[in-house]
Image (cartoon, rainbow, N blue to C red; front, side):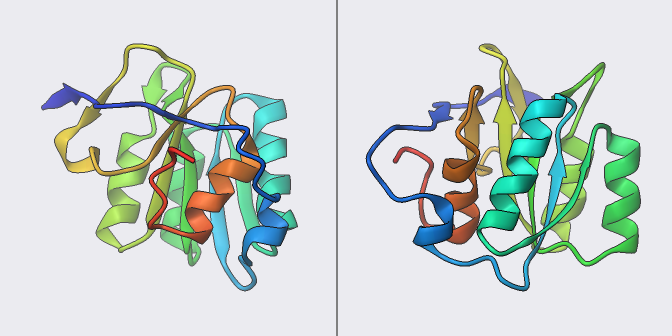
Length: 144
């Protein structure tokens, strides 16, 4: 059953330093699932800038699940809507493995399954460095 998510979190211009100065993703493998080319490459670059290894970016659930099944994934940034599908199956598979997930979406009216309601959500256009900060510090709620 899907339910409408609560407050959408968005990137803020709060004067914080960029992700590479905030903390370090060294040794972390971060799956990037995004079907918008420019945002996908920016998100992967932000992961690398923070010292992590970007897995992908990949544009769809099938490619993402292939990585989830074949690779070690330490964290993930997932676009909610990928063409005519959602990334929910990817998020559920990763959460089952204890992997931290962050959603990014451009939709005003979106729904999350109840088992994913605790996943941080950023509204597009999201600052990739801000999204990576959530991966670096899971206690942050994305509110800035």
